[in-house]
Image (cartoon, rainbow, N blue to C red):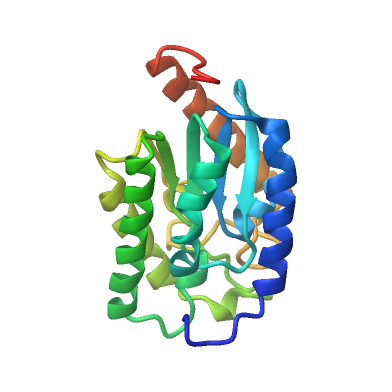
Length: 216
């Protein structure tokens, strides 16, 4: 994907500026939420006891996100982080070899968090909802395969795994009706459910780590 023109580059530059302006308000020890448009569209500024620095980049894929992660960790100095990426890697025509490449970059991202000693909550990309505007651009089976791979890669390395592929899927592996607005991006109701899931997850992780360690 790196050889292709990147139509999202101007938007990512704007996002860098916005993230930089919000960084001072959140301060060190906050919650860094990193990922693609599903993260950028997350509209809460606090989860559990922690303020959120939203580092979502619409359109970004795993390879493109990987080099941004150490820069974000260095500048934000978070106490905890969340990662949601992979949706834009599971496009139509995606092969197993391509997914292998995605996972090499995903492994590098995990290593960045490990080297920075920042506890990480990993989320899998949610399933595709059938019959909507963007449905035809993505591959349901590739998305499910990528999610399974991410769960396996994150075991023992993340402090928690939130499997959105499983949480939002119907019995056939597609997203339940109403989970998305366009086949990919989450509806308001799905975002509220995601927020509640993350509230519980972060509260559990924080309690397990001995309370609010903001500023540590």
